[in-house]
Length: 613
Ligand SMILES: Nc1ncnc2c1ncn2[C@@H]1O[C@H](COP(=O)(O)OP(=O)(O)O)[C@@H](O)[C@H]1O
Ligand SMILES: [Mg+2]
Image (cartoon, rainbow, N blue to C red; front, side):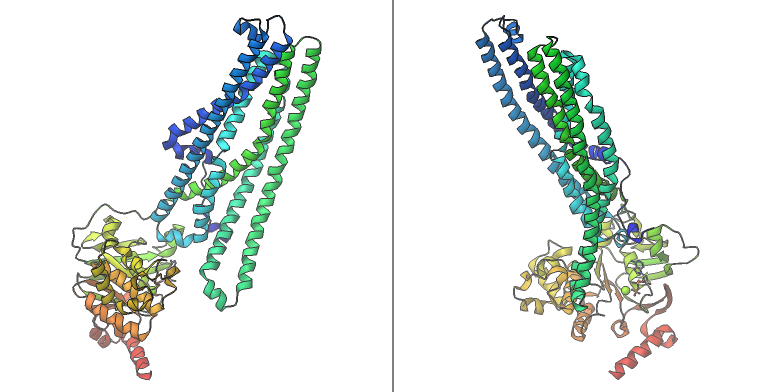
């Protein structure tokens, strides 16, 4: 399989129009109103043609036997015409009014559906587990959440209105023809099967082409987000030209995909025009002959000539509407495909009694990342297992450390504890309750994570600090900043707590970002505080500061510290040593040094290093 295809968002397989109808069911009332207005509008639109026939009828029949004459029961032709004019004016006014009503209802409905689709997909995406996002690309998701949703409106705005009035047109005009002259009806309708067959042919050709267009739009989205996200790296490696070329390749593919679609979509209109021309000339010739021979009344003939135009020309606009339809449906498939993605990690129903004590237990936990994405169960073979039978016992209020070589699975332990992933086997409990039974609010509300890769949102220092507790008071905020030893540098920032940190916090130094994330975690006052290599990427001064604040905030709170530098965890109640996904040693610093195993070896290396520097 194409490696890029594996990361594509799966398409929905149901017919997209049916999905869309089902989706917009909540607005049935508005939908019916819009349909009714479109139909009324069409009726008002066709009526003047009938009136033209009646007008000609009045002029050519001097004996009072015209249609209007019989209806009104008067011989006076001027009266007949005046009434006709009055009726026409009313109908034209009604046409404008119904068109206004139809267009405004359809367009508002389109905006409502688009808004709801945008919100539903975004809300749904938030419920999906981490593994989903690792598998997909944010650019591809952006393309669906933004481009595809916007595509919907291009069709929904007026597409349904146009399709309805075109179909109603065929029906209404058809009835008139059949009533007035069945022969001409057959002739005028001859092009219609050709047009329908043409449309179907066109649909089947166009659909895969627009699917390809949308897919390549997703690829461009990917490349763009990737490029913009890594702008510093691009510059550092002097790779600007290469990045531009990369986008050029994708953009060119998008252009080709569109060209391919355009070729078909443009061929449709000329085809319809030919068929229309044939139908029109037939009625003109055959109807004209009949009128000349007196088989067809002149009023009826003139009406039918107008009617044929009325019947057939609107069909030429069908191509454009169907084109928008196909584009929108290609996007619909992607949107509903995303909405169909089932979240694999669902919250439980149990809320822990507060205050949460923070008693953590891992019982024989094994985990493999690839089983998450491929669904393969390799727990029996042990292949791909990142954690193998990990058992941890972290009593409430204690500080425990997890150490071990890089890649041994330390961060994975934390991700499992937060239930960002689900263990392949084994169980994790918090205060005696399996975390899979807990609500996310209970579980994640009890845990505060300071992660290895710091993430700050674009916004002010204050917004970032209060992210986990929007209701925090100013005093709490400042105390948390104080504890994290961040208060000093925040006060020195140009706007203090209201300074904008830039996207991902890029306007701050690494150490400052790290202190902010610690303050952010402290402010939540979680029962369980987790620090995943919070000090590995910071300067010595920041590390010392973090050590000091940690000593203060970990008192009486369950704290899990993952550390690279062993000196930072030597005072932990217990240290768990992880190697290749297994807990190989556990104990206090002194016990482990005496044991003379992996920990003792690492310790010797690090203190040796320390002595050298
Ligand atoms: N999202 C992921 N998908 C697949 N493999 C992963 C993922 N995250 C980590 N790994 C792998 O799992 C192993 C353990 O990673 P991790 O727990 O981050 O180690 P560390 O002990 O350095 O924190 C590593 O071999 C890593 O390559
Ligand atoms: Mg790690």
